[in-house]
Amino acid sequence: MCGIVGIVSQRPVNQQIYDSLLLLQHRGQDSTGIATADGDQFHMVKARGQVREAYRTRDMRGLIGNVGLGHVRYATSGSAGREEEAQPFYVNAPYGIILVHNGNLTNTRDLTTGLYNVDRRHLNTHSDTELLLNVLANELQSGISGPSLTADQVFEAVSRLHERVEGSYAAIALIAGHGLLAFRDPNGIRPLVLGRRDGEKGEDEWIVASESLVLESGGYEIVRDVEPGEAVLISPDGWMYSRQCAENPRLVPCSFEYIYLARPDSVMNGISVYDARLRLGDVLAEQVATEVPAGDIDVVMPIPDSARPSAMQVAQKLGIEYREGFFKNRYVGRTFIMPGQAVRKKSVRQKLNAMSTEFRGKNVLIVDDSIVRGTTSREIVEMARSAGASSVTFASAAPPVLYPHVYGINMPTRRELIAHGRTNDEVAQAMAADRLVYQTVEGMNRAILSGQSAMTKLEESCFTGEYIAGHVDEEYLAWVEANQES
Image 1 (tube, rainbow, N blue to C red):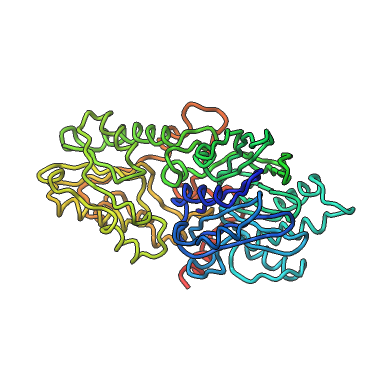
Image 2: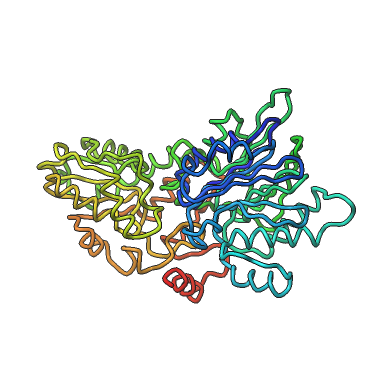
């Protein structure tokens, strides 16, 4: 999971990109980078850590130009600790290209072999973003004819890229002297939104970003989502061109965007994230009612912040008092996207505090957005008991996470997943909870997809084991796990 943004403006874009990355910080805390283009000259700064820590005044002064892009990273491929793995990535031919990417490629072994043996391209990291950039550069180079680069040549290069690359990817690139290119994988797994506003002299200014809240904050009108398989090319003077570059595109977005990853004030693929989380609570309440005897719950409490909408709806639907018992230290990052198990466990108590007056002597229903490794959940149950809860029922607005997620979320090994190979009762016992209630896969789909017809399916491989992109089989999963554990 990463956050990306690209802007074509009539004014300097350095501050606009910085502000956008602050809004996308929840999507990645490992590293960040900004690149701008001033004519055919690139300027780039990237560093480990969060946005506010990474850039100095001298950095921002050096990021000149009216076209640029930015990135916040949460590592799923490559190393979180190596600064050279931070995005953006750059190649000097053709023209010079800088690229950022949100997602995860699943055929990296074949791509690496092909780039080295056939395309004669050198890779300096283990990042799949560098792979994606070199595939794009190679296909662009091979398709250039004539003295200038045309939109048709760019779109043909993206079409050939779609034929070679498997997995999930939403990408933004700067092509020196030619503007900004954005494209999305043929399944639309990772999000990308297009926006426009009037410039100071009436010219079109454009933005593409992972989430719509970035557009709204910057005063942009949301034009639409970039379609699965589509490429959008925006010239430095604001002319926008687009084309469908995939043969059989379909919209199958990641379910975890709606459950946890995205901010609630974003709209993705026409669905309000906040409304989806409210509906997840409605459907979860039905499940709680069937599994927990009436009167066995005194109070419903959320784990802030992403579970709050679902918990409010659970309480309302069940007619049970809703209370805030956990309070969050907002200066600690999201525990789900921290790189190590020990770091996650330590950060839970730094991040959350349980107010004993809300727990003492009560049968508590705790609602969280999901349960992945169980590290956070175990700590939360222990905190509730230490605060005096008589019993703790734990409910998840997401179904059990049973399989690795290979499309851009760091759930790579089955042994890390608390629900893998366990019954619900065994998971509850491992978490030290009195009861555990999971959302069903059917209920999740019903909640998220409700009220619209454009989408009929979600990417839900971590719940069902059905992988929709790439040749993901047992051999591939074993290879991913071996590389993660080495």
